[in-house]
Length: 314
Image 1 (cartoon, one colour):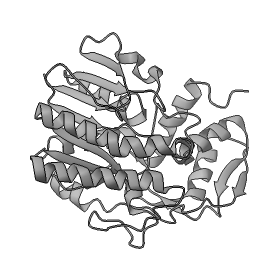
Image 2: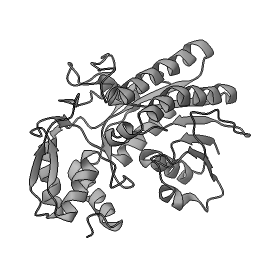
Image 3: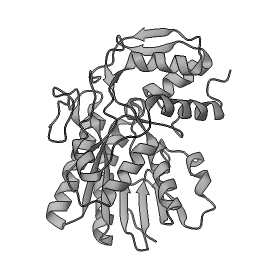
């Protein structure tokens, strides 16, 4: 049995990681201040004697009085709505929070895994995006608080690897969806599903020609697990290389929900990436990983989840 500390473990992806590692017989300590995570996501684990929840802001020092084998740092607002609402907290958790989580991993001689993001590529001038691309980021734009927090987090993680020999893993996560997303998350899929189930207009920014690559959460956590137990220290893209436009996504969700919703086009936000598609050659060759869940199948599961929590109810 291994002991894992998962910061941000009450969030969407973090809670799925708690679930995975508990099912495999490990001990999991979730650290979360519930800024954007929810206790509801942890409810299935609370009676498990191998699970503990520490309500704590990782931007402040972390003390864990037991052995720790792995530290997975997933604490951060992750949707534009969240990091626009909490810009300072986003910068602090990406800088101070990453520093504290790395300090814990160093003290415990634990493996450290950083949840980075495709947003480190900004509005990319290279397509698809490979891990050796440095990105095209506006550091002072409204998205800069998230983009630069994650770019700094990668830099300090690799500094700890080079200076202190901490075994660091970096996953660059592309758009991920599935059960446990919040209705008010602000990202395309929860927005579109909630609007479709309510029969409301689907709000698409710009003309909907911007592209995204959507990965079902089960595929993502499987890839994160493979990276955690690998020998890799360089960043790894995890995402679905199937690229689709936001307008295609909106129409697919209308079809799958049987909704009467129409499309409502809105102005495109500043610095919204025009394209997003991962090159997953490194994940395929080094981890033997690629996504297995078709977007249509994954969306059906996600729509069922949103129905179960009453999304769209009047």
